[in-house]
Image 1 (spheres, rainbow, N blue to C red):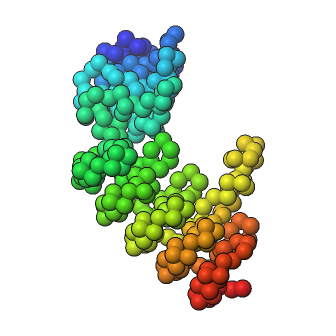
Image 2 (image 1 turned 90 degrees about the vertical axis):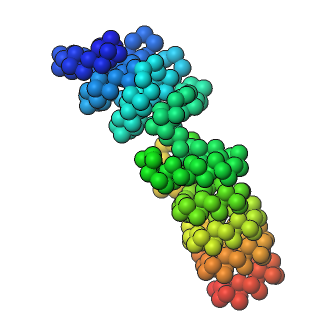
Image 3 (image 1 turned 120 degrees about the horizontal axis):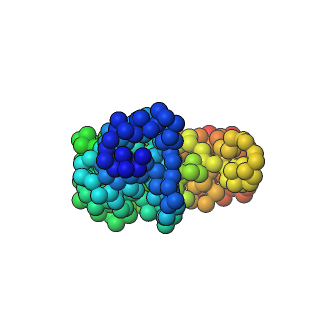
Length: 298
């Protein structure tokens, strides 16, 4: 079947499948027919294999490369390999899945058309943020917002962060992303929003930028100490909601951040997972006076 996949003999592949040949058969190095079809840009063969439920995320045994890696590194015509990549992504192929060394398919692609098919544009947002390059950020945004690529502004990197979340410590880039209507309330794996992280960093400028963009002050992060995913893999529970940005600002003893959040109508009576309002424990004098001015229940 691998030879048929290489030669894009869709009829031959289909005939073997009808006779019971498994679509996901792996050779001694773990290559599947879909790896081969993707490598050579055999579009029709790839369609037949995917219709037969070939898994586009199957890693080989050499370095954990998936068929998407094969499309990136392939020998066939770039445009055909890019089409195969799009087919596999539509079939739930994950372009953010790395090989054994953590390399993504996009990292390996040298042809721009293949890079775009593998999600280069949104990940270039992250790269521009990482390097703090406003020009590169604007160019990547243009590719997405113009519809040149069928992707969204909310694509996450392997750490589960959107580009806006990653830009939280870069006010200039953050402003550009907010103007492009990126989701100001995006959250990471700990359910923390950019507002949470800006407050925890004591960053007044970024906090103000986010609040001006209507960041949701009611979002609560995750209580990691009570999250079953961090305690026991055998428990199936919903992680407890924990603290708002105001809880964190108050706990840090930062009255300037507290004032900003209260002016944005953060609730002084919101409770965390311990049923505590902000600030927990000892109230510093300045915050007590400020909270009473905003009607805190005591």
